[in-house]
Length: 223
Image (cartoon, rainbow, N blue to C red; front, top):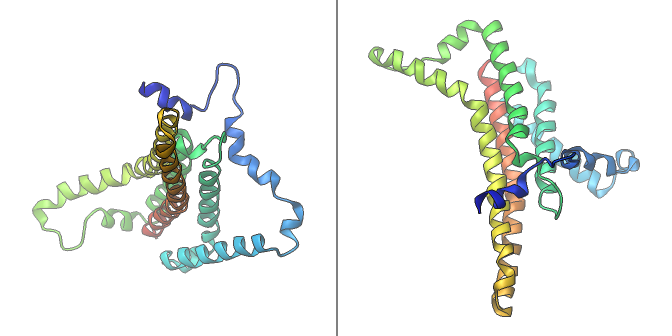
């Protein structure tokens, strides 16, 4: 029973699957005039980009890395668009797969760690020991901090994947029970599904924001 429920999130088939193409195909449907003529959609898009740029610029403490907000803004927009696409029927949600979320978090985390340990070695060692900690707890705290740094990409990937899967799975379970309900119960189910869809719309933005903000905080720690 559980395998049949989660099979809807399976990205592959026996021959070949174009599910992953839906992750990038949305960008091909944007009209070319969108980039030249300011429309409401264009102004909304630019407003979101400028707002996220200000958010990330506050978190990045190093003035030399202010321009790196473009990376985090692009990451936010990419995740948000893919999360929204998963709310439409028969469109594969790439962010509900561990291979997708881990491929976003692990390379960025690894890059930050390599840069920090190569360029700011002393700072990275100091960061392993919280300020004001008693000497007897220092070995234990170093181990805890090291483990917390190592599992960061996994926690980022699992957080995004679990939130996407949980909402989709709940809506799938409720939708499958519709054929067994009466007319009154079915009307109530439709209202609940609409409310869940609104909640999932908010979750798509929140999860993209949390993912990009945490990546930004991790990058600011190494500088």
